[in-house]
Length: 470
Picture (cartoon, one colour):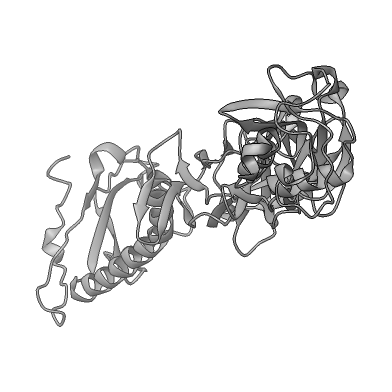
């Protein structure tokens, strides 16, 4: 009945009541989820709200209805642009406690005296969620490796930005994202990149910057992992001899130790270590390898050898583990070895030979009979007697004087025998003829006795009278 008499008023009250819980949005250039031009959805059409009597109480209802934070300020069309289409509400008056904008006092849907240059807008604070953070690869990162850190939020906002920063220090980098995540790449990390990192999400508009709480932190630790190098031994002169005790190289020959490593750190150096001594030779790595040359192998080169690889990065020194040991044995050349052996045994052989010869000689002397030599010289003396000299008659004495000399070998004794002839006192009375060629006869007789007790006999019949030959 009441509506029959007052149809217009009934329509207004009905529209207001049916508009309870109407959808609200924020639109316009630069708008966000919690800031922008206010629009409501009515009769399946989106329309604007006039800014007459528009204040923070009205904005508070809109911010609450949108699920945003507190109302920061109200703005006009200068901030988020002019809308188009219908203007649904004008002269809106709210107490701030309403749950929907349509619960506030207004002139009615579609009743206004405004243009779109008077479209109302709001700026609400935003309760941004806490971002999540992740790092790849996780855990320790090798020096020089690339690292990526990803920040994300559960709700996407327009014109949001992620900021990555360290918990201590001045590092800070920001990346705008039209999605709910952003990835930060740190290329070829060094020790200066070590630290704990956090993410923060931020929404920026013309009126305010809204930031999220800080995310949890991730720790970036940079390390240097050097693999164990390898070591090899070669000899350009001759082949090497491998034995259970080690590698044999001939003294005087050359040999080379080569150290190799598979690593991403090329600016390093190799050290060749001789165990049990202070001998360390260091060379820079060329293509991750180094060669240590020994032109002449000597005995002092013997021992156990190993290699290590060292690098210096950002002022810090890193050393690999040692390689497996190679035992080097220096041996004599074969010819020299034989000569040395011969030189060492030759005096012993000579001494042994001398002893054998001496023993044999003594045995032979003990069994061999003495050798006797008898030499006989017969001389015919021709002389003239004084008694017959006056008578002119010559007397010729043809007697033969034989002198026999016996030389006994072995005893070293000489014995002279004569045939009863005595040397005259004077040689004046005798004329001697030397019978060297025809008259001298020497006969040597050697008797061998088979028994040591036999004696050597000499027979005077062995002498020949040279008268017959004369």
